[in-house]
Length: 168
Image 1 (cartoon, rainbow, N blue to C red):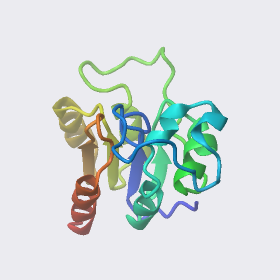
Image 2 (cartoon, rainbow, N blue to C red; image 1 turned 45 degrees about the horizontal axis):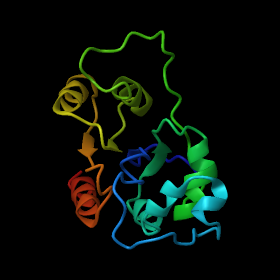
Image 3 (cartoon, one colour; image 1 turned 120 degrees about the horizontal axis):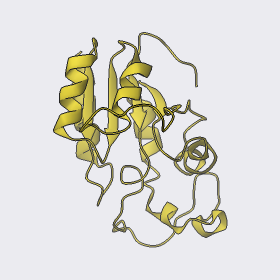
Image 4 (cartoon, rainbow, N blue to C red; image 1 turned 90 degrees about the vertical axis):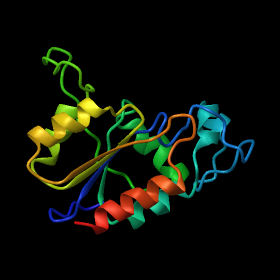
């Protein structure tokens, strides 16, 4: 997926965001867009992926970036399930880097990667401290959008993100 410098970036988490911690109400395993069943790839939690999330994410018009501890495995496992192309993957700082007190371990690295570009960060662990730190240290527009980890991304989340992007 080509990176277009003027487009907003969207940093995307997996656990709790695309894969909710509670089972989805639509029941048992569904077929991935690539045709594999969740148990075939060894992760029954993949049943909780919403297959519509891929097209909805692509429709936002952002440069999508995996921002997850899944690292490259997100491209190998999650992308085919929800119909996403291979995406860039965040390169996280070494454990030796000094964390900033009170903010999520991803926050500083995401702001550095955005380098002033408009961005959306979609994660289930975002707090008010992360939002404050981003506002103080990022010179562009940013939306740190917290997803309810019990249900993952919802239609309302997508509406919120679309509305924020349109207000640019």
